[in-house]
Image (tube, rainbow, N blue to C red; front, side, top):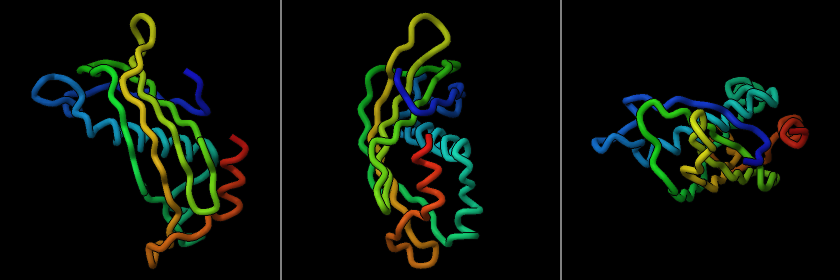
Length: 138
């Protein structure tokens, strides 16, 4: 598991479906939370970003592959790797691993593209240089 950032989460009952495994769409939530925590470690607060620069980050595209199911009470480690930092977008590769008992097992992988848009117009705009600078130091 090579990553720039990783974050642990526990699988709760609310994360599972009728079959007792994590509902497939919840991996998007896990990935989103990990990216938010990664931003915090770089010193970027999304509310402050909107207030001071008038921009927000939005998901433009997401492609996920599922490898094995997670179940209730599993401990997951979600990784965040910046594949490409552009002028107005960031491409991430993310993985969800089962950890805590035995050797880690890869559960899901995702390629997520996030765009920077104006909070007023929702049109693409450049990532503020002070923010992209913090992302480059990770």
